[in-house]
Image (cartoon, rainbow, N blue to C red; front, side):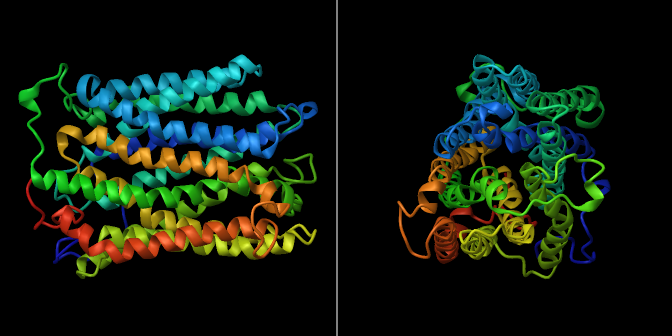
Length: 471
């Protein structure tokens, strides 16, 4: 039987019943994600805003391409960061180095000149490479192989990610949008958040983590310590790579949130400032960047429910296997873009649409994300051979590199779709979002069909039952 002990009723996830180290990593990742999503909420808007208003005045096409390269590379460099952590540094040293580079990157962006802008993006890419895969791996190191708390723990950890993703766009977006402060304050606030996270980590590591992250990697390469992979390990890695391929389709669509969906919010959505915000905002419109806080807000509301759902289904022996969970995530994502097809069709007639359209889309996207992303992270830490844990976490993020790069180029085509220069099915922006409905749902259906084959390749390691094979 999967999930809780059969004699125990499943309960809502609680950080008090998790390893103590999860509390620290929850807070540290919250601040790192605050810095990342706070800056990301500004990037596309900064690029397309006219120079007279402090932006760079780029076209949507050019901005989308740079956005795609940046958000893609922050998922490519974790492969290198994970390898260096596994082989030489350990996850602790890699994480500290990454935090320092990330903070320096945000402060470079705040200097508001071209050289500092590109230097800042480079530092952010390198820093995230050291930080991202290693903190996720460190969470996995808190649990034994068959610990039933793992999926629930990763969902709690995912709430920390999204708490930062909620606060970041609100604070950084407000500062950048305000005539009193401006873009430099928005980017600088992201750097302050990363420094806060790094300080908390260094102050609490010994108390909450002990040797976790210190002893996971040899200091020098040792062939005897790394025997060749056996057949089962190779098959488990193969299953992970197949699922990573399908994950690319998820992130290609989901990452439109920071690009084409933000442009849609800026240009096509009614952003009239509610009366209760008039004292905070001098403008009659609230920042488009604030829409990027909607998804993490839904995550915080729904993640405990999803975590409890997996526990209850697991205790009853009904919990879906990981490939089916991830397939449902893709289909839910496609359903969210179907909502935007109708919204875009209305806005293309010249009428700004209600923000509730974007809200409904983000709600479905959130349900899809909770079905795919945290369970995917937990899966990698469960099926990856221990000696390659951080490297394979980096490989998992490699799928997000390809997806984000493609997402940026696709987002850059928004105006071409609007003008009918790509394809005409429904017309305008509706066709842009219709493509995302088709790719997401088709990938989800195909993943469902091959799920039994993937389950065999994983040899039961996608489950957290006591019957899972030993490490």
